[in-house]
Length: 433
Image 1 (cartoon, rainbow, N blue to C red):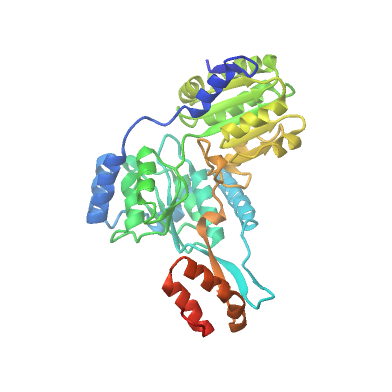
Image 2 (spheres, helix red, strand yellow):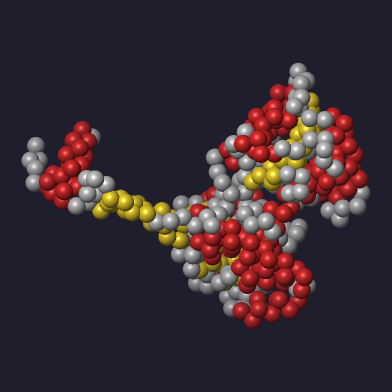
């Protein structure tokens, strides 16, 4: 059974610290292997990518068959359930609408000294989206990554979609078309990250790589950062639910398992002020696990990483929430707004009893690509800003230079950077001394 912790107990602080600091990632050192793969892709390009694809995905491709042809992507719609396709279109429009509202504005202003200052936002020219080929076909991830990129104005959006044994879920291709993806390739793993970063004869390089993946993909993204930009290095999924006794225990149990079923490394935590409610949720979890198709994964996650914390009062839980800095935070309480105001660190907040986190995974609007493993303390979820660059603008007239140039000259001389000083003084027609 998952941990049942009581905040009032003497040993709570030690147990809680262990809960939030324990690594849930698989303990495997893949950096060396990944470095060799990346070096090989950089050196041999498509030949290396094709060899690794044949080895690990058991699919023999050629340079001519690496890319999905447009007609295959288009025809994928015919193989999809009509209701599911309709849901994808609804989700894509909601995601686009949310992210259009995020778009920042350029600005220029002129000060009293005659100097004009400002900034402008421009999109990256190209982006690569890695789509994992794991235990579930996460076509929602295509929308959640690709739609914000297109809203931001990315001109060329590339998807790498691993197809082990040559199998492709048509919904993945349908999602690519709905989101406006420009190119889709049948490759995955660290070799796909290398192809996106360095480029090959078939796949031109991109400026930024986004999207989740396994340990090899995560390591590859870390190693190519600097050559290209990356969104984040995501860890296992997690959910923290703060709930009072006014909830239906079965609802809360389902919310906890919605993340537990992702992976055995996922984490689900409940904080409540009612010991009786905590016990009812634990019982409801066991009931759900008897019928869920992915019960083996969910049970392993729940038993290894799950926890139920009983606090003296719910407002005292705010400090615990901030220490966890969860990827997903549900506030299933009678009056969530004061509690939300007390929270500083969370990837996404789901407010009230009728806002399950699963809405955010699919249809609500914000991207479900969120900071994990406590990184919500200093980072944000994926959005249009991940695909935009801010450029500062300085427009200085002769009068403006006369107003602020002497101060710049004094600073340059104090730092003993003579060329800096000269570039200002020569315009001011001042002595070089």
